[in-house]
Image (cartoon, rainbow, N blue to C red; front, side, top):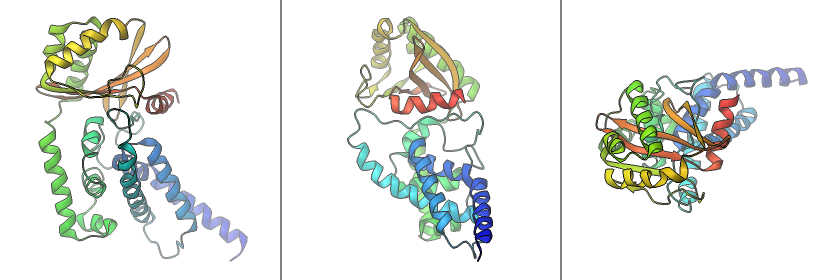
Length: 298
C-alpha cells in the first residue's frame, strides 16, 4: 500500500468517525455525567479507530459505539472511587443542549441533570445498558454484544435500572411548567420570601450544592420543605445582592445562570413534578461551571 492509499484510508476513517462523533459523546456523557471525561473517551476512541484494521468493519458507527461504551464503563468504575473523595455532593457536569437537543441520541432521554444524578447510584454496566436502550433505542441483543453478556441479562439490567429510577423519581412536568416553577423559586429565594418558597417546594424536597470545597457551598444536602425554605431565606441577604440572572438551557431543561459582578457563580436547575420542586441542584464548582459558560459564548 502506498502513502496515498494510507492518506485516503485515514481521511475515510476521519469522515466515518466525525459522522458518529455526536453519538459517541452522547453515550459517554450519559454514562459518566461528565462532559470533560466524555471528551477524553471520545478522543481515546478516535485514537483506537486510527490504529484499527478497518478492512472488514462494515458498520463503523456500531463498532465505535461499542468501543466508546466499554471505555466509558471502565472510566465510570474508576470515577466512582475518585468521587468518594469529592467534597460535598457530586452533581453531573451541565451541558448546553440548544444546538443538539438530543445530544446525539435517537430520543432525548437520560439527559436532564436530575436523572443523570440518580443514574450515578447504579453500577456502570446498568447505566450503560439503560442509556443504550432508553436514549439510543439499541436492540437488546446489540446491547448484549456491546456489554459482552446475554440477551436475558441485558433485559434484567435495563429492568432493574427502570425500577430504581421509578422508585426514586416522580414524573417530570412539561418544560413550560418547569420554567414557571423554577422562576417562581428564584424570585422567592431572591426576596427571602418564606411562604412563596414553601408554596413551590415539594414536602420532601432536597437541595444539593456541588462546590467541591467552594466557599459558601453546603457540603451536605438540605432535606425537607421547612429546612430548605429557611436555608434560602437565611442566604438571601448574603448571596443575591449584586447578582444577575440569565435564563439558559442545560441538559434540555430551563436553568438559571447566576452571575455576580459579571462573573458566573452558580447554575441552578431543578427536578420538578406535579407536587412542586423535588430537587434543587446548584452547580457552583468552577471546574464544572466554566466549561458550560464557555459553551454558551460560542
